[in-house]
Structure formats: C-alpha cells, structure tokens
Image 1: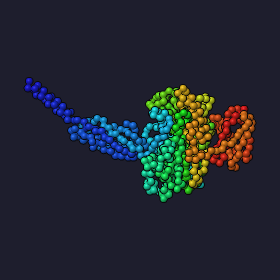
Image 2 (image 1 turned 60 degrees about the horizontal axis):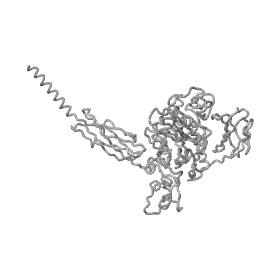
Image 3 (image 1 turned 120 degrees about the vertical axis):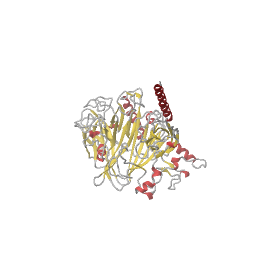
Length: 631
C-alpha cells in the first residue's frame, strides 16, 4: 500500500512538473508595425523591438514574406533586410518568431507604405496598364510577376518584359554591344544620360534614377494657369529634364520642351512646358556607358537612349484603346563611328499562364507576336480562360528584317538565350549561338533553307510554317516563349541619332478562338499603321506632337498585276548601292540582286511559281516593300 501511494505521488509530481513546464513555455508575441520606404531603395528593419516573449525567453525571426511581392527579403536573427522593387503603394510583410523552446508566435504584420519617388510609373490611360523603370526594361518591376496588364485592372498580363538590344562594329571591326534579358546575370544598361566619369555619374544619381509621367491634360491646364499664384505646378512638369549639365559631360538639351518666351531656359513658371506624345506619356533616359556590360560581356558603345512611351485616350477605337507606343532616340555620345549596327527588341511573352504559349511573326507587317497554344488559358491563375488573346509588337518607322525565338526547354542547346556578346549579335541576324543560320521548318535549326523570319506563316493556314504547323516536325509542345524582332543594319556615327517607333498591340475577340485572335491582331495592326502613316487618330490625336516622324516616301510601284516572267520596279534610286530582295509570303528569301537604273528596273521572275510574294528595296537606311502576284 505504501509502495503504491509512493508511486502515485511520484506520478502526480511529474505530471505537475510537466504542466508547470508547459505552462511556462509561452510562445513569443509578434506586434504589428508600420514602415515607410521609398521605391527601389534598400532598408534594414528591426521589427522585434516591439515584439516580446511573456517568459522573457530569447527569440528570432524565422519567416518574413511580402504579401504582394513588392520587394526581396533577407532575414537574420533579429532584422529584416529589404530590397524594394520598382513599385509604389501599400504592401504587407507577414512574419513569425520562434523562441529557444521552439515556441512559434502568431503572425505579425508590417504595413509597408511605399512612396512613389518616381523610380517607376505606369502608362494607364487606355485599356492597358504598363509600368516603366529608368533603364530600359519595360513592363517589369524586378519582381517575379508580369505587369503588362490588359484589360487594365483584370490581373491578367501578356508580356513579362521587353528590352532593346543593340550592337555594331567600330572602324577596326571590333564588336560593341549592349543587351539585357532579366538583369539576373548582370547589367548592361544604367539610368541617366552619358556623363564624363563614374564620379560624375554618382553625383547625378538622385536626378536620373526616375521616370517622368505627364498627361496632355496636365500640360493643357498648365498652359492656361501657370501665371496664377494659387496654381501648383505638377511635379513632372516642374522637374522635367529639359537641360543637361554640360560641366558633367551631359548634352545641353535633353528632353524636348516648349520655350514660351524664347529665353533659352526651361522655366515652367514662365509658361514653358514639356513636349510629349499622345494623351499620356512616360519619359526615360538611360545609357550603356556608365559601367562594364556584365550580362552580355560586350564592349561599351557610349550610347544614350531617350525613350518615350505613350498612349491615347480613345476608347471608341478598339485597336487604339489596346495599343501603347514607344519612341526611341538613340544618340551616339561616343567619338566612335559604328557600322553594321543592329537593333532588336527582346520580348518575353506571357499570355496569361506563361507555359502554354506559342510565338510567331508576320514579316509583311513587321510584326512579332505571342498567342496561346490551346483554346483555353486556365492552367494557372490569373488567366484569360476561354478565347485567349494575341499580343503583338510592330515596328512602325522601320521594316522588321529578322525574327528569331529562343528555347530554354526543348530544341538544340544553340537555341537557348544568348550567353556572350557574339550570341546576341548573331541573334539579331537570325543566327543561332553556334553561328548557324535560322532555317525553314520545325524549330528553325538544322534545316537546308536559310530564312530570316521564324514561324512566318499563319497559325490559321496549315500550309504555312508556324508552331501550330511546323511543316517538317510534329506540332510543338507549348511553353514559355521569348523572341527577338530586329531591323536592318545601319550606321551610327559619332553624334548621330537613330530614331525608332514601334507599338505593342493587344487583340482579343471573345467570339474568336486562340488562333483566330491572331487574325484579329493583324487587323488591329493594319489600323494602327494607317493612323501612324497618316499622323492622326480617330479621336483627333497626332503622332507628331514633338516632331513629324521621318516617313519614307514610299513611291515605289511594281507592275504588271499580276506579273508573269518580268516584274517592273518603278522607283527613284537614292544611292548607287540599292539592293532588292524577293520573299515568299512565308518569309523565305527567294532571290536578291542590285538595281542599277536610276528609275525603272526590270527583274526576271520567270523562276517563281504562281502565288503571292513581296519585294524589299534597301536604299541607304530606307527599306521599302510592295506585294506582287505571279500568275
């Protein structure tokens, strides 16, 4: 009996000890905080200053995550290091604590107020919401999400990022090149204008790590009220980068503006104002010369890019309401003359869910596009569901001379994203990383017929080359798609400026299939080109708010229609080195040669089969094209 009682008392004592021990192990308590930060800046924050453990036990941070992906977080025992992305607004960091008894806290919330310090801004006057940052990577704030949102406010997107590539040869035929994809493997572009030294770049950092967003309505109001004492000038107008600091090696004139009193100064309180394009505009200046090119490995060119993205408030026109425009002025600020310069636009298409897409081009329209491979886009949210759209990029001031796609899944290893400067330069000439040329059929590699345009057929036509109808291989497996559309080579001498106009066009008719929406896209592109060529829009806007774009007078005529054995080309030559190229409707080069007579030339087409073709004339930096029919 005593033994039993002793055992019982022992068990009770142990139980009471365990209960007391358990009761003593209270988990830490996370107390909510508020944090104020600037976009694109780095911060170290110590949230546990407000947190506590009821038992006085030490504790550490074990998890911390942005709810809306506004930045990158690295945690230590007691601090959170934050690298803010290029966004603004309010986000929340959710975090937990753990004490030395493995007690886990409640979820603590840090409300993060992100100040819009103009390091990014969004073009959003029509059906598209498209963000821009200060160094050329359009539509991306360096988070893991796509942001070319259309329809605006829907959460669905069609492009992850789009960024220019450019490369050329100096007088000794050395390659100079700047090109980026995702800035994850290095950097080739830097915000701001070209300056004389690294020290001077750093001195002007606070001025140029930003974009300038302005609307036509703001400018119109400013023009009518600048003289009133109660009027507050909008920030972007007040701080418009109209002039550079010549003492830092910058150009004297930077962003275009109207000098109302012609005093040679930009003084908005005197009525001066920015000259913009469209009804809403975002202006950016970036360069390739501040530091070494750590992504492409290419030698610095010394270029300064003035980029203007703009859109029109014209909801009555579906094509214009679903289009944004980009104008580049590329200024050679170096002392080097470059030749064989190639310019391309690398674009990662993500049509809703990113891994079920196809890619293609229409060389006759200077159009590259992405589209969904399946009738529905429902594998992952956010998505477009039934009848997904097509997204296009079209050169307006130039003819697209090349288009090539990249494969990081499937295909040959030479078809993956470029790794070194020569890879990028080759790609702008429709060459793979191993130097072999793009070929017709399949994935464009290892064939016998060299072409300049990959997937130049129509996915609605089974007789032409597309990802839906590869012609020489089974239908392709859909996945993430990225491509490069380029223009013909040109010279860029010291001090010279190359201007390029292009547009991003979205098309979706919910009564059409995923493939039929490619046809809708082409219809929209034809309308956009008509507006551009005629320098007018249905809602009264103009494309020449700054200056008239330099339209090539396309006075070339070809006849007879239809033609048989001979094609007569009526065109006034501008130089003595004029090249003609004849392409099939699928984009295959059929023949080429020189035009020698000053005005009227005859081309032998007796070897061509019946069908539709187009002829390109390359004269100096001009490229002209015409379609013709062979009977």
